[in-house]
Image 1 (cartoon, helix red, strand yellow):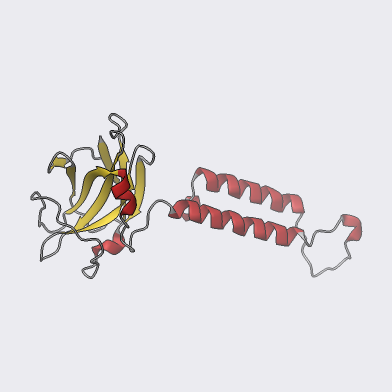
Image 2 (image 1 turned 90 degrees about the horizontal axis):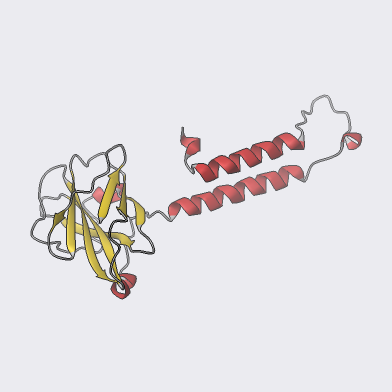
Length: 198
């Protein structure tokens, strides 16, 4: 029913049942992971009125501490979480004990999934250090607004060729070139919000 993806690794669908409503995924060699994707495989939907809280545990000498990342449901079947900030020892938000199968092993992190009523999930607040997938639309919105502002600002200086005053120290760029760049950048941003990193 569930799967996880850690960047640079194969999809993981093998989990350990703790109870009828709680499940654990082990993430070995977790020191260098920054993001994790949690998703429903689509084979089995949640029964009506149910969803799942998603927790993360980083190994600590005093034992596992579980931090609420967020929720998945039939209406929101996947989420991406930035977990790098949760690997610090001073994060104590939303701690819970997550069954007896919790492991204390160096470099082994865990994802816990707890099936719960949707009204209960709506009252839970993820840890303040967690960045959910909502950051991508926020970034897209910012980038789009920035592009529009740049294009509008630049095009406000547009003049026709007959209005141009000869100035040997000035370089002119056709507005059509700027418009083509703007449209191409928007298209690439929609296809892959992080294309600019490569």
